[in-house]
Length: 129
Image: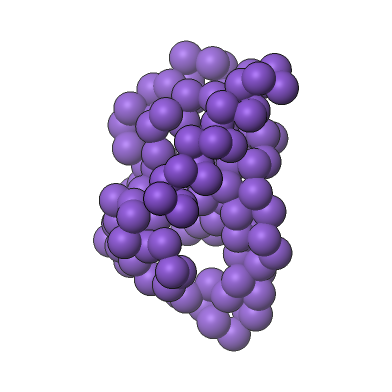
């Protein structure tokens, strides 16, 4: 499974286990016409772990508005906060991911229970081993 990177500004115990990118370096680098369809894709994909909300490090005064957890489409997995930063800030995504989402016409696949279990196991392995 391919993983979108974590954001270095969002501090978690497992941060060192993932590739990292800086939020401030990626803001406003996503084509504006892609914000909403990619946001929807990220939001409508299968949630593997949901752990509440955290603060936006770019706007801490907003309070806990950033979703925290992990989601997947069976091929890629990502921290759930990607959807927020795509919509709010036009956060840049890897070109391979954008091409993948386009190839699916911005519609996440319905995963079987076996696919969900496999993705969950891979995320758990990445987080805890």
